[in-house]
Length: 144
Length: 144
DNA sequence: GCTTGACTCTGTAGTCACTACAGCCTTTAT
DNA sequence: ATAAAGGCTGTAGTGACTACAGAGTCAAGC
Image (cartoon, rainbow over the protein chains, first blue to last red):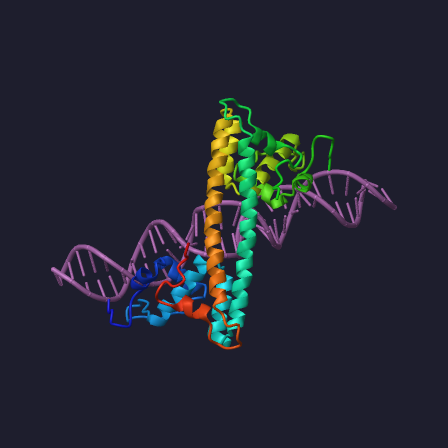
């Protein structure tokens, strides 16, 4: 494979970013990675710009942005030029969503530990968890 | 629809549990809800036992159990009889997973706020978030 | 008894963000 | 010249639903 200084195949791109080959092709198909030029034989040939873009995408995913949100961010960069404040507000919005999710999960953990603590731990087929889960009243409704 | 005291259609079951009709049918197809008896015309006719089971499933889902985990819990109840300690250990295991997820999300939120705080907020196309996200070095790697 | 309208039926396809595979082709090294 | 490694397309599967389309069923009012 003709790997010059500045052109490389999908495998190298994958290695350098930690994003699987199939996932890169999936990103291309769904439009957030561009169609790269091809070699004579049809291999995708990438350059540094692709590397940066894919790193950007990977980090956004690690940060929990959905692909639609990433498209939004990339749209700012690609099309109209962007302003720092636009990007910041998207990021803060996302941080708020994460905060809410943490809150929900904390409530959830509390509920789980609380019902588990009601267990006798005995080897008998009689468990407050099972009972509570089948209860018509919402005894287990997630409490704050 | 012949709604006697103790038999009701899928619509009523849905109303009483807050689980959508399509979802109930999906649960049936995937085996965690039983095939209910049918009316002469083919309508599913449910009884209180179904109501309890569906409530159980719904709460487990709200508590973040996967369908496979719920199958495990229901298996304990359905088949072999279960012991309180079995159920408790499944629940605690799940609580630990939730705890880990909270930890991850906290790290995530911290990172998001930290990169947003580097923003000037100016109306200029020059943003540390975008820069950082395209950075070859892992400046944004999720820090603890 | 008939019509109306609300309800239910099955089956298929779409969602999100990938992942896995089959069967073939290209590139590079020996 | 050939073998090994890597790449290609296209399709299907994951989990937990959701959204139809087109047909059939039920209860109530007239």
